[in-house]
Length: 377
Ligand SMILES: *Cc1c(COP(=O)(O)O)cnc(C)c1O
Image (cartoon, rainbow, N blue to C red; front, side):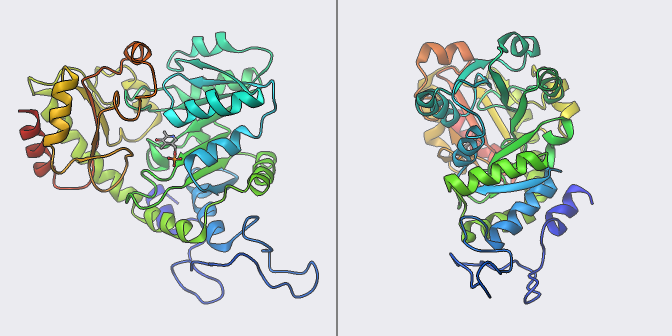
């Protein structure tokens, strides 16, 4: 089955009880047992719920893994994955990871002595140099936010294998429609499903997929023990989102290409960050490991003042955090998503005061371009 077909026919597509073609929302916490210990596979909804199970099965199929898991948010997914490790273990992490992941590692899990080092994972040699005898995993995000930096997943998998580490990939930006990290050698893939997978700015959720029976057993134990599970209603919303993931991704990317070429010709725009541009640093690797470049673009308009004006004037690009939805969004990383990072560090990473980030939606591309044109004037 190819990806587009899997989105419709993957996982569990019909309800066995009734034949309903949309898996029902099993809004239940517990299940009647026929005798003590004799049940139909479900005992309590933290441990398992049929609606969540259907979602977990379709994401497993989309990522070509052994088992899928649904959590109450992307952060709950990442936290649960980190619970697979012990205190005094060490994890190598992409240096410009999602701010919430940075905060989790730096201000929460550090208290439990789970150590970490931030590395520019777009340089495999830097990753190898950061490995210690306590290193247990490499966590990479590719493409990253907001500079769309690319990490070579295959190169990471080779390093992980050589040193007996787990390779974890945050696949939020690419989605399984464009990029399947398990096929490239990753052990665990995770998503903030609040973004492209949900796709309609109406649900906060996280997903994870693992590549072995052992990891499946271990992560299920954590999911059930820690309890950050996704409810049946939100599980259903994600399954509904997944059905149109392929066509949304295609539509967003088609719009993005037109917007990028408009921005390239605009005299008020300097650097543009988009993996689809030939001069983008990770372009060749992005082309080799993903079948699309996505709908996220960042560009520099010179100053915070000019950037603020662009954000205020934009009409169809809603000024908001988050990304990956049908509606186009616009944000100013230095003052929004990355405000908690000291300015000096931000500039080191390349996140300038005038950097504008857009998440392109599925509106008419002509309207989006006209909107950016008037906003940039
Ligand atoms: C949003 C996001 C997260 C966190 O997910 P939530 O669903 O907001 O908890 C993690 N990684 C990336 C890349 C994200 O964009």
